[in-house]
Length: 321
Image (tube, rainbow, N blue to C red; front, side, top):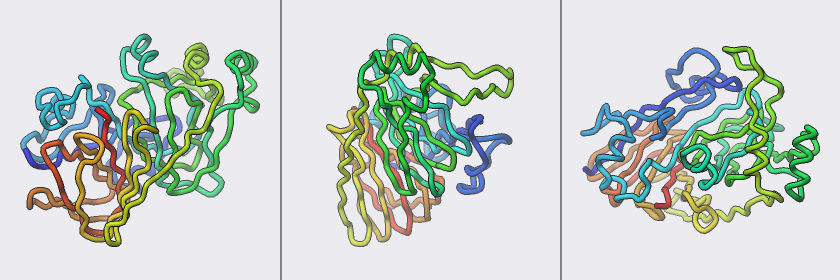
């Protein structure tokens, strides 16, 4: 098979969500506060349906299992990455994610290292990112005493920023931010603080996971150093936002396409692509596909090269497998 796999997004209602996934991306979303678009996912909590070609109508994880040649005959038994668009109409819970070893033992799934490309940030927007504890004993003491303002650190962000969030990092999106998230395929989150919000259905305070947070938080926190690499292709710009050895699970790119640009897999066997602005044309083996803001697709391992043309901005990723 020499064709891309286009995918139908899955949407999740969140207490902190809004309606920008409809107004900004044109998605037909359910009623309510929709916070997450699972754009490229093989996770059982929201697997995508393929919308084109010979696998049309099939779920991505089924195709991943039954046709490993499309994914470079991977070692991973599960589709390893998950791409989302998140809208923070209110602040998310302040949280932390486990690494692979802890998640396998306690949650029976992958750990969760992730990163964010900031699609939009309102003036004054910031992340909760990192913490001030110098030792685990100090971390535990501040959590036990609910010294949140002393413990949590803030990071201002603006549109176009890129932030890497390794497992063990205390973090949260805050109000007025929309991001494209690339992460390991995991749905494990340990909440540390949640503004005393109550679950909409049960009316109970949302569950916290303080012991797990004490177990998995990296101490002390050191902000990762990001070293993007930029390559010009005519007027197009290809930026490698992060790759090995800085990121052990994925490579992430920003593609600013302004003229016909030839592309190929670089650091992984297949490529995940999300169009976050503009329109263009994808050409694979002389077959053309229209691209629009909000489209998400996979270029499989059986496609060795392709071209993109138009005026568009895309975030792409490749798994390390």
